[in-house]
Image (cartoon, rainbow, N blue to C red; front, side, top):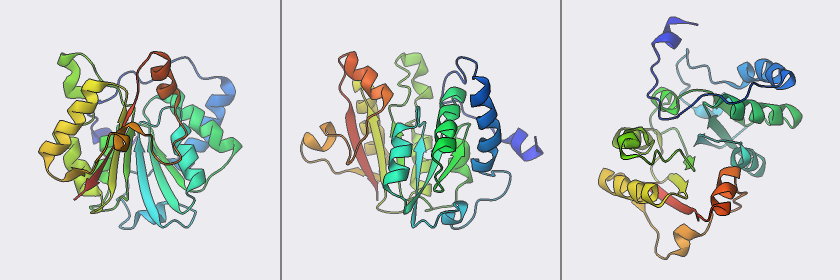
Length: 232
């Protein structure tokens, strides 16, 4: 581990890092492929993020906490003209995605398996064409609210790396977190929520594939909200 890597801090907006032990084949594929897909954050970020991808892409988007990877893989296949930076600190979820990429390779995905704030601080100004944060940990207890990813400091980060007019998309099935996000984005001043009718936030995003977390919410009687904020 390099000195730069040791000094790179984490703000731990996530919970546990791993679940069940990986199966030998999962571990083998993860250990072989993940180093090839991971961002090299010991080097400065390129001025043009499109150069991170072996595919020729026109735009670059970021998904924070991709979970099972359903949406990330769906969008990467649906939008081959876009490059995607996927961030997920949970070991089992990252292994699942890497195995999927081993079986069906894509040239427009790069990965980071630690804190998303590390990537946000590494990226150049106005370098992203979109940020997605779907079904993040709601940290429901008040004493844990400081660990919610949507906060003033992270919205500052979003505002710095997003191009003007680019979206920050947020989905959650927890009403208090939805309200929290609306309030924080409104107070921040650099993000505009353009919803005009209830359908603008009740209807999932275009070509939305659904996620396993969303399915769990539906089984438990919770309905998701789908918010889109534009960077001013």
